Length: 330
Ligand SMILES: Nc1nc2c(c(=O)[nH]1)N[C@H]1C(S)=C(S)[C@@H](COP(=O)(O)O)O[C@H]1N2
Ligand SMILES: [Mo]
Image (cartoon, rainbow, N blue to C red):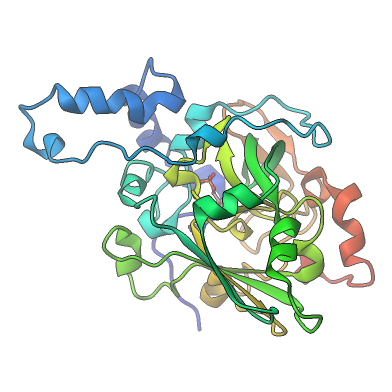
């Protein structure tokens, strides 16, 4: 069945940038360091008691994981472009739970930080439920500079903090029969207006093979720019799969199920012809409605060529040997 999506990232970046919206945000926060947007807004709120709409807004909730950061940078992963400005990365987002525009960073502030529990179950020795702060104590945190390539043909270069997904897989102790991981994001209609649209197959669902999940590049971001991850970027647990299109990198994960059946993912359920399970970056395989040959790097004027596996072929090409099909790149 063909479901028509009215707006959003289902369009090439050339007309999906929401640039006018973005520029008005930019004026709003002009002169502030991007990381301090929320910190800077709270004194504004405090001093602004003429505007009832603003006064009723709750001050930002402090993130209990803040003392963990910054963490040491892992020098194995390098960029060939400058790090994208924190302001762009934290104000230009895709997070459909909060709406289909790029300007959801303020709406995402409604998501409570705690309690946040991760469930690990399915084909594992023993199902586990663990609070995020306990989990962070157990995981080997590092900082990694990774490229991110959205299927809409825009990209960014981010200093994430977090841990290898393999550490979490080892912690979960999957049975040898488990072949896939299914990732499910939070569901909470009260804070996420996008989840009131029932024609989306909530919760946001993604999947990887065990081999992909235990590849050294597969990463869970819990921070960025030396601080806890902002809500709009997917705190407290956000997949980071730099060789795949960005929609594979689920935000706000609450549940990982180990299974022997390939899951149907969120965007695959909506339009499998355009958004598949594998979604590996390949400049030579066009999206049905636009070319993937080049990309717009946030903050740069010129478009740049896109690379096979987003430039990470040396790490991941082996995962797909003997699986030569175009579906690997959709
Ligand atoms: N839960 C959830 N995760 C998500 C999305 C989403 O809508 N919901 N969008 C994806 C897409 S399409 C992209 S490009 C990245 C965007 O991440 P960013 O906003 O941190 O740049 O998040 C991905 N993860
Ligand atoms: Mo994306």
